Image (cartoon, rainbow, N blue to C red):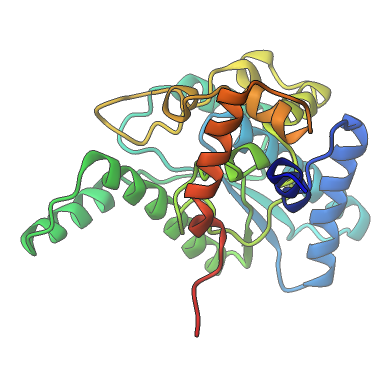
Length: 268
């Protein structure tokens, strides 16, 4: 079996999807988990203004709305967390995402002071972190906040990672991948756009160029410029299509170099 086929099997990406059915499957997946764990009363997503958190947040809100109607339990809620570092460059998009999702509750927590405090403490011990490492600090600080709120709100931290990020390792270890549940894990970037279009999301939110926006030296740097390959090409690879050998090598090298990010901790 080729490495491409092994990766596709491992990540569970379908070559063709029905958007309406995938939306229903994601929503039912979230609802079933909540109904099987009755002590959980909220779903929590960090809203960045990008495609992935927009889709995940909308699916969560629909799941909560349906649960409220079906169970008459109004304690169920979706909590959208805004977690900017200082002033966010795409603030307007974030506001548009919140309007589209219409969450039960929105909390705004600026992580800048916490990250700077951590950086300062490390510096006192002689540890000088790079801009890149500081970017990972931001991602982990955001996740730390989400879990603190989840503990108070009887919540479940919902991941926004998808197969196109997973295959390349384009996430922060124990940061944005450190979640409780992930309804869109088996979708690629292209399929996520299809779901948002079906959900009548404003086009500018799912057509915008993806960016992690973690490094201060390169604000709003596009993912694809870092990866060296387009998401469209990655998606085609994940759908089992034949792509050119240069891009195939780039994707597979990214996958093999980031195996540690996807593996559980090493034990004896």
